[in-house]
Image (cartoon, rainbow, N blue to C red; front, side, top):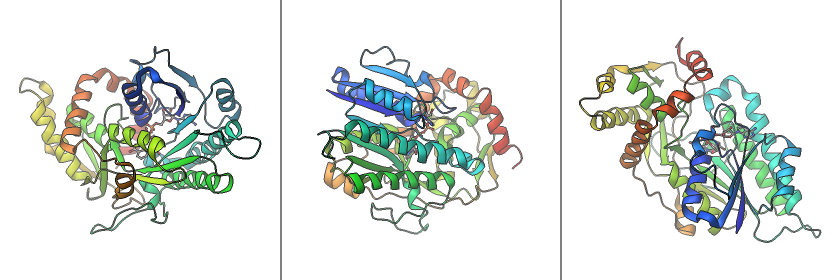
Length: 360
Ligand SMILES: NC(=O)c1ccc[n+]([C@@H]2O[C@H](COP(=O)([O-])OP(=O)(O)OC[C@H]3O[C@@H](n4cnc5c(N)ncnc54)[C@H](O)[C@@H]3O)[C@@H](O)[C@H]2O)c1
């Protein structure tokens, strides 16, 4: 039986991954979720699994070496899946330091604690112990509008403080693999969407605002392209890389689903109109007039697009959820979880939202 230490499991992708893993392995795994519960972490995301005897939660900062060592000392961990990070580009532009702190220093602490727990006296590591570092395609920089893809061999060229901090953390993992033969993999994934995504990110923000008849802010000309992947497909890819991938390798994960931001907004508006019954009063709110162009994000990367050839050829992973189906599932989830949305958009989030968009 594998025992997983999942960092950042109360966030968007981490909580979807934990749900996926219990759905797939049931009682045949144990998961210890370590999360600091920043604004982005929410234990409500895990309420239907929190009483499982093979799940436990530890509130800790990944930068706190003593707290992380204590988890390794107490539990016989043989899998680490490291999600915890500051993840929002706009916030990184406003306050870069916390991104360096959590994403770089926190990753160093995670690597060091795992190395200390797993290293044998001869400098090799306990067999079948593995660390997976979850990263982003943003480390590769920006592509031209008219072509090209990110491959695992594409040189790193991060632009935002977020992507620079993720690139640094990837480099640290590579250094541990090269220097100590530390048993790890890195995955670089494109933009995710799905249930439990915090509404500062494009897709839940547009769904939430449109339902309330609030403006839909679009950066610049709206033609920046992202490659969208349904979050459960990402969770599955992470598990497949950890179990079937070659150690020390990087795998790119993407959906071959490139869309301009403005296209995403139109798809969401059309899907909302289709899905909301005539009798639903929110239907009247959903109009194209809500679309409002705002000053572009500083240093906004134009296009990201992943070539997922390696993960497909070596591991057999392919995205399963088509965008039209994934967006319907996501909207349906938000319809059924209005309370979740209300809770996460109250208080501090309102202040943050006003500071980001009110004067643009
Ligand atoms: N969202 C995407 O589209 C996307 C795409 C590719 C890769 N990624 C990567 O996947 C990972 C998860 O992203 P997400 O969108 O779920 O992020 P998220 O912001 O929703 O969740 C991050 C989680 O990490 C926790 N956390 C933050 N700082 C911490 C600290 N110092 N100690 C312990 N826990 C801490 C938060 O409480 C939260 O639960 C990140 O590493 C991100 O870079 C995200």
